Length: 336
Image (tube, rainbow, N blue to C red; front, side, top):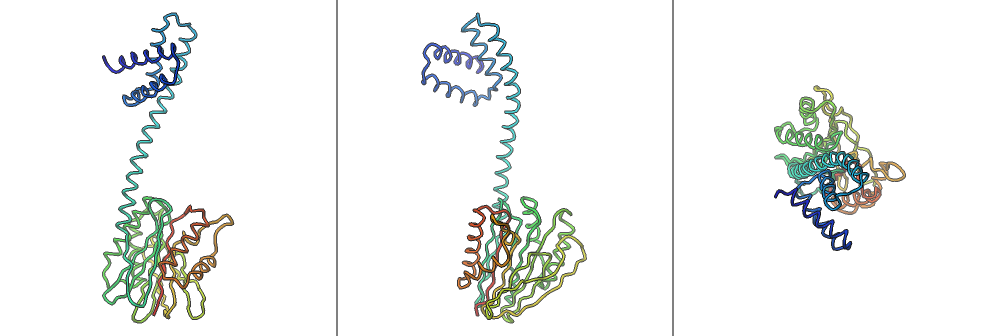
């Protein structure tokens, strides 16, 4: 006896028992029976045919209109069954895709993880939070033999897996550059060629690269269309925009980038960020750059890591804990 015959026999027993003695115990048997149907992948239309056969066995004189009603129900369930099976296939694919994205996100976090340099006289803090599972933001630190610290922060115009793959490519392109080419403008010119040759024309990358010299206390930097950061003057307790002109990466192969230099005094801070910080949106609209500097000033006496974390928590709360874009905020403070 195959499952269909067993199913029909069992269903007949349940139905007869319920028609004679309707009670909740029989309904519980129905729940158990339905699990067997699912386990054996019995379609809704097969169950209609089973019900029809059992009803004809219970009452051979079943009225004609009742039998005809089964034909209508069968047609309905045939269409329903097709849609149901399609949804199950899509649901299984979604589960597989979700699992793959989770694996990719974990790999991205491992591959792009950057160690924060620790040197006397400077304090560095950074927070980077993706809006979705995978981030289109990137930051990195590179120390050379002279203990100069290279700081990169970038943002792919786009989200999801393509943006994450692009960031991985940039990270490993940077790692492969020889040490003599770590001047900010040279870094951007080299990466621009990589992006122009390897990234889809519909994707663009903004990037800021700076080099801090802890001996001369100088900060050299260049920008490829990236969101302007801030420079904090401790002596006057004032912020100014850290502006730098430069074309986005991947637009023009032979682009040259201008390099800027600042003297960094004790207590001064360099604040770098992605547009996910400046484009935070509340019920009243986008926040202003002055709002960001006010939040930093509010926490100015804390260490750099506490400042970026407190600013993030405040902005996250204002947005009702729902990021609309990847968020990256980085602070370098000269302490001595």
